[in-house]
Image (cartoon, rainbow, N blue to C red):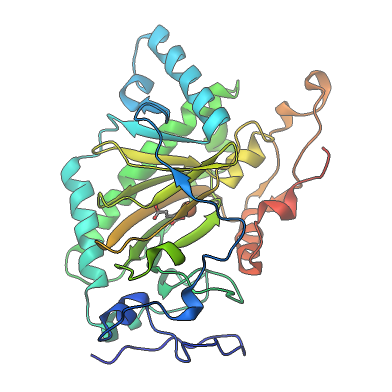
Length: 361
Ligand SMILES: O=C(O)CCC(=O)C(=O)O
Ligand SMILES: [Fe+2]
């Protein structure tokens, strides 16, 4: 099968890969013993190595307690949620009620999608971030300094559900998975509203979640001959409110905490949950959006599915007015911006939060 090419929308010619292919097509090319120089990332000084934390290092939230009728249990879990969002911006979510079989099926669907013949996947190829179904490689910036060891399928699944019509049955599974993960995130955001001192529907209303923007982002990290010098996704924060992530048990997610990087190995059947930029903005910095990245390995192909839920695209987001001014004595630490405009900013290649953060606020 001839690897299909991606048409670059920059005039720069990368130094070694003259025609860009997907990472999957690259690893299928015969005799690939080393990575092309465009993929070599090890020289980046901002990226230090990660350590393996003890099992009980990361916060764990038991979702079933969030829906508990016992007020004592509920207030305890709200406190735990507050601590997890404030100190880490990350937690593992257990007892969330999404079935193991649905999680397995959706990962299998992604695997089958990435294994479709290249011509079939190329129907969905695109660089325009507003294309509702998009197959691609690397990351979404106008000019890529490095190529990343990652192919992806990104679909907008709410307020309108868009998804590839192949492989057969995949879109039905993905629609159910999108619906269930949206429900879980909305329930978590009720708890987060309370942990910020609001009534439980505060975030849902303030962010207009009935038409909230939800993405289904499947990532493929093929086996890499030189994982120590390549990178799947570089350090970044997610744009929405909260992201739920699952993976096929290979490992590769790393999160940053107090300037240190940690490897994350999910508990069985858990969701990995991270704060996104808009939770940081809405909470006026109380809940920080966590930096994370995905590293690659030379043993097995990794697939992850990230499902972020954000505000409605036309929502202009600023810190909650109740958290600034008056008795709080706090100033707004972020400028208002429409979510759609915020999403566009990712193409510029620097952290989007830098566009709205008010220095010394
Ligand atoms: O694959 C992972 O573990 C991380 C994926 C991710 O951060 C993303 O898709 O935004
Ligand atoms: Fe991410």
